[in-house]
Length: 29
Image 1 (cartoon, rainbow, N blue to C red):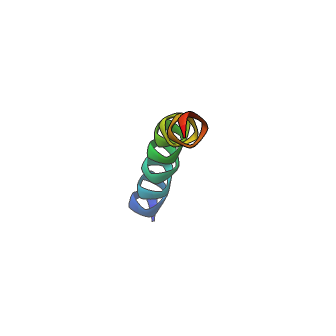
Image 2 (cartoon, rainbow, N blue to C red):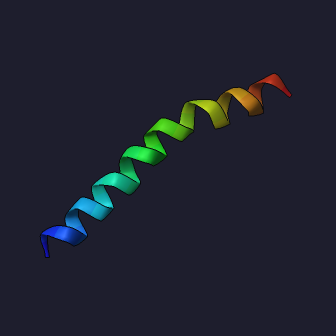
């Protein structure tokens, strides 16, 4: 059960890390 929480937390963290780069690439176009 705790493993699922860690997996979701890691996924959310990676999403937050990737979001700024994605927004920057969209804006630069």
